[in-house]
Structures are given as structure tokens and as C-alpha cells.
Image (tube, rainbow, N blue to C red):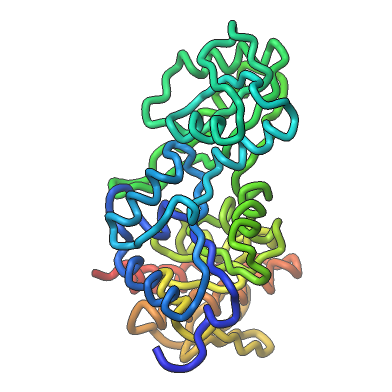
Length: 339
């Protein structure tokens, strides 16, 4: 596309994977083309995932199969960030109880730690991450090891995970199961905590990156915590109603329907008393209710409308005022989900 686009304001783009680049085995429509276009413009690209199930090499292979040529050096997982947290506390060769899949085992090996399966192996720490074949036995061993004094690190605490078939329980659900049996809280490596984001920024040697994610409570909150600009995309876990209700620490710098909005001009707000405009869409606040002055005709104008409604709702919320956004959000959602 000709002319300046949003991505040109940044030296790198950090992408969450689930819900942004792919949904299970399938690429999000336009993701491969969008990332290729970003690279063509000279942007550095990194992939950041809270999903600890697979090692970076497997993630890179999957991305390459989807048409996004990727090396393992372009991928940073929460398992890697979690293993680094453990490695800073304990000497190389220390035993760590593994809860999770191959990604957790590989991350520990990468930093010189030894993964074990039983609390009776006297591990100094527990590293708990997502695993497709997670068992109750693993959760039991984790609880026992923690009760015996092992330091507990969770790769992430996402309560859910988007897939091509729908939303399913995430690693946070399994962490909560262990938490019920112990009296300590885990140290968390993944978003919204800083270790994973900081590790990716360092890997890319980025000075001014933008983070692109589909979850407000992890991706966007993680970017806010790390002091990064961010863009919420609407192809994964969180949608229009979630964005409008976002707390200050969950509010993105930009919104896009999908990651290709990085290749469009930044959305610019026009703020006036009682209303906010974006593109050809205007949101108006009257007697506690937010309405649109017109009806968006396509996904881009609906995303403009959403950005206007969200910012007007946030402005009211920050002043302690509640707003009724149901009608406006319903109109926007109908356009965004139109086939």
C-alpha cells in the first residue's frame, strides 16, 4: 500500500499467535500476506506466545507450513521465559519438576536445567505450562513438590485459549487447580507479566516495537505493563464488548480487525464535547447512552466505529460515569461478524 501506514511508526512488530496469526491448525485469513508485506517494508517481526506446549522449532515449523516463513530464533515462548526465571535462581543442573508438554522440557534443557517427573526426585522448582496431554498425576506431583518447598513458576495464567473449534480452557485453569492445594502463588513468566515481553524485545533488539494481540487481559495488559504500544485485533478471544469495557491497564493504543491493519493508516480520533469520531463514524453520548450517528457499511468502518465508541466510553468511565453501549456494540458486532 502506498503512503505511510501504522507499522511505519515502529521498528518491530511483536505478534501473539493464538487468535492473531492462527487458530489451531489454520492461519487467520490474511495473516500470511500481512506478515509478508510487513517484512517487505523492512519491519522486524517476532512471535510471542503464552502457549508453552511446543518448543520454538515446532512453532516455527507450523508457521512456515501456513506460509509464514519463520525460524526458531523468531519465536519466544512463555516456557522459555519461565525457564529463564528458574535459571536465575538456581545453578545449572538443578532439578525442575515439569508440568506440561515438550515445550517446557525443551526450555529447561536450553538453560541447563534438568527436568524431572516426580516430586520424589527432590526438584528445587516446578515449571508449569500448557500440555496437550496434561494429566491429574502431573498436577498432583506439582502440588506435592510445592508443598515440600519447591519454587513454583507458571509459564502463563491464561484462563482460556482460542481454537478453530471454539474457546477452551487454558493453562490458567490448570494453575488454579494446583493453587487450590497449596498456600503460595506462582511466579508468572507470560503476559501480562513482563518477562516474556521483555525477552522478545531484547531478542529483536527493538527500540520502539508495537505488540499485536487478541486478549486484553494478557496481550494488551502485558504491553501496557512493559511500556509498549499495542493493537488489539478482533480475530481471537476478545471482541467489541470486551474492548468497550476495558480497564485503563487493558486499553490498546490502536484497534484493528486483523493484523493487516498494521498496513493501513493509524486510526485517528476526533474528540469533541459529548462525541468522538473516527474515520466517517461518530459516537455520541446523550443521557448516559452511546449511539452511532450512522451505520458502518463494512468491517473497516465498523472497526472505526468501535474505536470511537470505546474511547467515548472510556472517557466517561474515567470520570466515574457509566454508559449504555449495548445498541452501538450490537450494530458494530453485526457488521464485524458478517460473512
